[in-house]
Length: 343
Ligand code: AMP
Ligand code: MG
Image 1: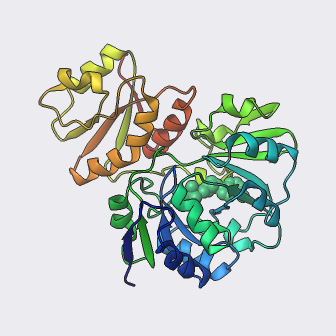
Image 2: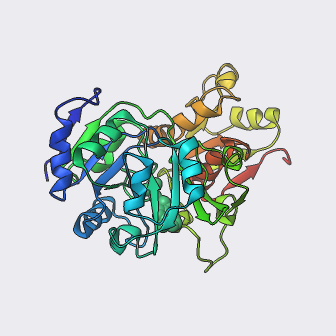
């Protein structure tokens, strides 16, 4: 299939209507959001949902998130409740996905066969304009081939999706760079299934109780079923093995200084001058977690393009936005953590 690639920066661009038309007739359109690029199709159309799975090479038991233009549109597709609206008031439009009981207007194919559905109302102006123009809920997982790091810019989308979708809208770089926070609502209790830019502390401003699903930072036991099917073991992964370095600041720096030449180092900006001669991909300042989040997936892809044989990175903290970084990096590294202080 030939993929039309359009650069669009203005949400009023008339060509968004062409993209909307593709969605209405069951086609696939990749579009930018504030988190990562999404691979969109009509969420009500089971053939279109199946086309998403085929384009991504994704197992069809891994459910899709549906994107709506207004938080209250969730009503058409899910059983909402007071806590949904409390969350919506504070975080929508924005990088939060809520899991609710599914209504029959959304076929099981879109939900990976589950009786719940994930709803998100993105804030990116082009995403919003596209959903409104199409006048339908857009089912959209991240626009990467299954297992690969999510794309946060159009070049990374094109690398995975050119020839697999009808259209790619290039809206520049994604602001956040990590996928949305996913919270499952069970009455007044939230279960955090995937950490993102809406942090646990932020959720606790609205929900009386938030539990973190064990798979967010831990390893699932063999044969254990995750609450969220996307929590499978290796995910977001570059081709080269990624190793996360744990230990004191100086010990990690020293390890990086002695790392072999075939390795690529995801280092902090402050470390650049101490690592001259090494192959570096700086990810931002030590304390700038937002910048590190934005840089993570594109850096992992860049390390592959540079033919890294092994990638070393800092183990991120687990508080605030750090939890989202930790969760993605742990999966990208298939849980490989090296403690360098003990050596
Ligand atoms: P992606 O669209 O690539 O960000 O992946 C969406 C992820 O959302 C899936 O991999 C699941 O982990 C999660 N998800 C979507 N729908 C549900 C649901 N109904 N219940 C639990 N997790 C869900
Ligand atoms: Mg994904």
